[in-house]
Length: 74
Image 1 (cartoon, rainbow, N blue to C red):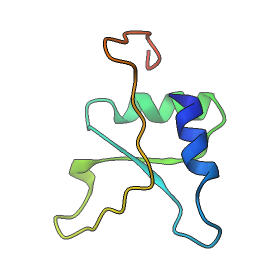
Image 2: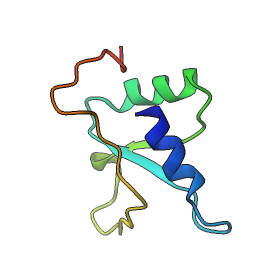
Image 3: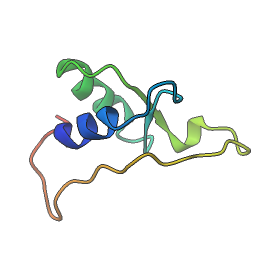
C-alpha cells in the first residue's frame, strides 16, 4: 500500500493540485496515522468530508491484495 501511494505521488505533475487520499470514514484516521509514521505527508479525507458539489479527479488508486489482512493499519 505504501509503495502504491508513493508511486501515485511521484507521478503528480508539477504545478498540479496536490493529491489527497480519499477513503472511507471508518479507516481515515488509521490510514493517516500509517502514512505519518512512514514519512508520507498527504491529506487523508473521507467521502463524507466532501461537499456534495465537489468534483473528484482520480490520479490513481491504491488497493490491498484480495483477502489481505496484513494489519497495515493497526
